[in-house]
Amino acid sequence: MYPSTRHLRFLFTCLIGGAAMAAPYGVSGLLASPRAEDARRLAAEIVVMKADAEHLYNGKMSKPHQAGLRARLRGAMAIMPLLIRAARRDVPAWPAPDRDRIASLKQALAQGKAPEVLSGLAWLMKTYPFDATGLLPADQRPGAVKQAGNIHENYCAGCHDEPDLDVPRPAWSLIELGKKAPEVEIAARLVIGVRGENMTAMDNPLKDSEMSALIHYYRTHQPETDDE
Image (cartoon, rainbow, N blue to C red):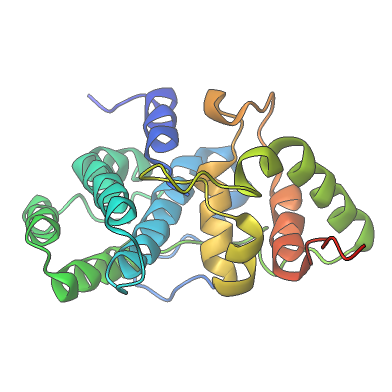
């Protein structure tokens, strides 16, 4: 039996830590339909996993933060077959979960084999590509960006502007992320991180247009400094 969409969305929320890609199984245009939400969430999750793995192995993180990322990646890999099965209801052309390959990926993570982890996640990204239609290119209209700033201040700034770095999985600064990360990574993190779940304290999911404007806001926002 397939897991329910509601259950999968809860699992996605619990796993959150902090250009569409060419592939033989495309999803372009499907995402205008709510039915494709599971497919987009799966693909976005894989983009975030790949980015997190790159951070894990770049040698610039503290040991507690490395442990937090490894735990997040383990959790995501553990439910990957379930997420793929749910996503295939949106995109039947996508292949069924390759359990052997996913098991090898989990083993590589446990053994600290960075090249194998990164290559395995790259394969997942190619097999289940993230379609950022409706999110990219980012909405640069002044009114939309101003609204995005209000959304950030009201719902995100409290945790993300001053992250608690003493915990294994901080709510990293979205402003800093916007300056350093590719737009597609920011889009993917918004898709799985701000969708109106209980943990985000949002009453309703953000619209694609709002997330699109947030991407531009994070790419261009300059924090105020106390010069006086």
